[in-house]
Length: 225
Length: 271
Image (tube, rainbow over all chains, first blue to last red; front, side, top):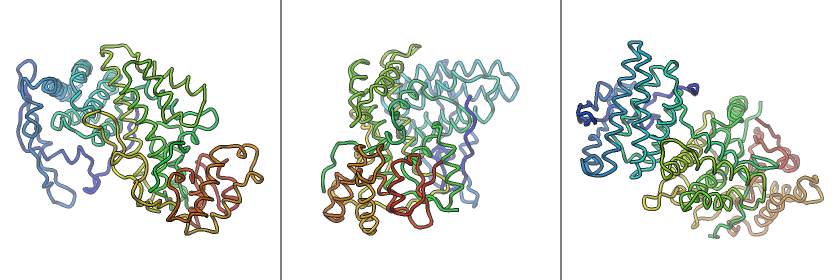
């Protein structure tokens, strides 16, 4: 498992995408689970964020199912299936954190397996937003690689929060999706695609000088102004 | 201790946590403060490494089969002006392995997974490189593209900021304007790159020849008539000429900088 790469800043000016979203969900929505259970989407962590200088986050937005009813509605196709699977994965991440707190590592391992299965199935249904699919696939790989015995509570909480972010914002833009992956990486989830890493290394390689190859001018001409 | 003026190779390492040079680049920045990065480095980053990743993504996306994806990527931006057999073999092998991954995914989802991972690499390199800790941006370029990469909603192709990997087509070259403020140094750089003064390794190098040609274009045409197609060819000469007093050029590529910095009386530091 990857080592955490650093801590995030908490200054209001430097809030990340997920930090901005934490505390801005005001709708106490529930998501249907496959077995009929109802999963509360919001919790205490959805309370308005109070910054260090005392002001509460004023940016509030409705829940994703209100903003994007066409994606959530039953019968709306693959997006509804993907979101249902993500809500299941989110519930499993919460259960994993709960199991971790009570020292039940066997249950943690089982929940991680369920998250891997749900994200694997969800990935196939995320063609409506490839940036969403990018994070879902990253989570799937990270969870499959994880050793339940070395997972910690920070990782489980970050995983749970990330799944919630995706569920609440299925139209997430590419840059923000990348930010979510950075946050997973920072706490030690390793979801990198090893074959693609090898491909990228090869693309940037050169027989003579790797760095020069990566920045050398291309022969294509730019138009003159 | 001198301050540092980062070239694009160091900016790439700062933006790539998985690269072997990442930790060294961070150490260089913290040991050589103040640390500056010219916007020209981002212009090179976007038109170079970021575009290479996006181009590979878009070629795999457009190809109807894994074999055609490999053939297309081998004709892409990563191979512009280069004919390295070993590199082509390495890229073909890696892409074949990525597209042949087995598991629970269908062939279409395996392909999407590869595309998404390339997308991730491109967007994070571009994003992370822009905000390294302890580094101040300088020498603004009015013509440079800014903003995040985006997925084209209809084709799913990966696009540069404002649908552009290069500079604005309607503005003059800001890099040329910056360099024209240092005309004497530009003249020294042109002289330093004369073939008679270069080592055997640099004498026949295409980049060195193009660089001298670009500098002569700047001398002769002046910044307002400078042909923008030469902007990228300025390359290392930009960093050598524009490195401010009290700073050293920070690069992983010393061989190309040696003749330029020696002629201009500037220092080079490596991570």
